[in-house]
Length: 68
Image 1: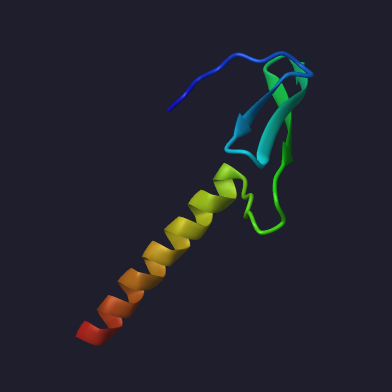
Image 2: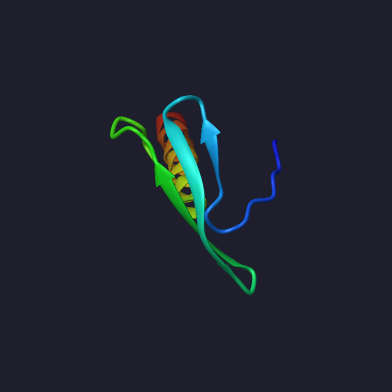
């Protein structure tokens, strides 16, 4: 994992077509702007983890139903 410090107005590039820019930083709260192609899925971490957990739970249920 790359860890970089950025101030509001500064940004990092991911490849040639994804820009992550610090919009605002206050009291431990951070606002980011992400400029990426429409074909790039951008999902907040907590939603991604929920989707992953749901998939794993559904796979477990499917396995248990086949056994029973």
